[in-house]
Length: 178
Image (cartoon, rainbow, N blue to C red; front, side):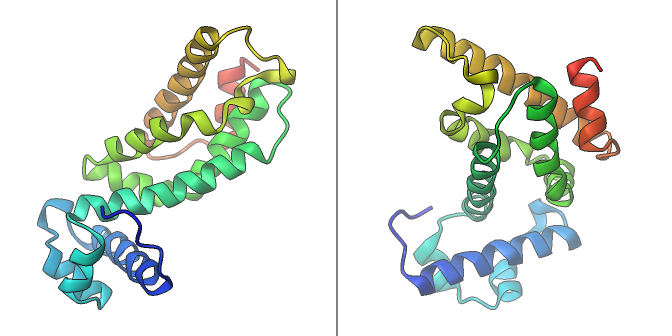
């Protein structure tokens, strides 16, 4: 993806391409989507596509980065007293995006979400320190962050693979042992 494209018309074009890609994923497999098909579906010129992106995967990464930005805001907007609360907020957020997660999983693209997830982890550390207990050093912080976020990610991928059947509070209850 090209960096530095912040002009309003560029952002509009990027968003139209991202929405167009999700629309096409509902109709056909990712491997069958071409830049021409995407541009036609999004009603964007190929030249505009190449001004903003290099590949279709870049469009997907752009879309997921936007979702991850919302994710960080959502996690940071709450005060957490226990693991159940963390898990409930976490899965409630992803439940809103279940349809996209299922499409990505179906097309073996969930790794793109994981790549963004890892990139954004450092932006929500307070979420993972229940009752404001911060670890004594950076090493402890990194280990705890990896442990909790990895566990939540694994449950999320299980939830996706099982068709997003359980509700967030049910998943949170299972995780917290309640």
